[in-house]
Length: 116
Length: 115
Image 1 (tube, rainbow over the protein chains, first blue to last red):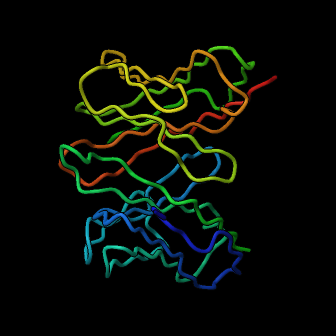
Image 2: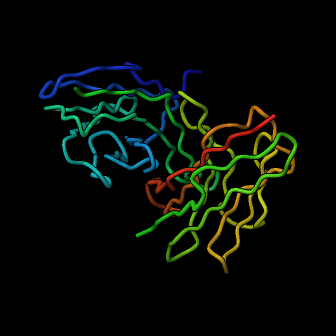
């Protein structure tokens, strides 16, 4: 009963490096999202997906790419890391809204990223 | 666009005292409302939610929240705080039924509990 799993938990990058933050869920949820958390700003939505093959931008999408080839996985890619991307990243999943399963998001434990 | 305001950045209460954390939202229709808690170095845990119906909702760990449409508020309360309640609390709003869940969060309130 893992829920939402994020890897790695910590990462340090140099400016210009690329990396992928992994997110996997085992609840068969259709919707998945990526948020970043910065001090004094709460969590802000980066990208989200309503199903395999479908993604869309959130509030702060610049500098990030996503794809959703399977229901379970929703990786977040940083193509050329910048110091402004130093943050804590959270992945979340939620079921398709219905009378029984409303808009409740389940969060992973987060990835703490530092870009030097 | 929806928005959430948590006016208190930091609150300190004594153990055993009552607690109220404020949350105001801006949204055209009745939103879905949530309170999440984040312990240091941890992810977010759902405390409680409001979708419709009874405006006083009960959550985990003895927390409750009251939805007041006239005041666009969804304040979180607890009658007696425990030292383990020290954490950061986030209020969030969602669009509502039939759409993909996209949360807008407040900036959070950090709760400190003194013994």
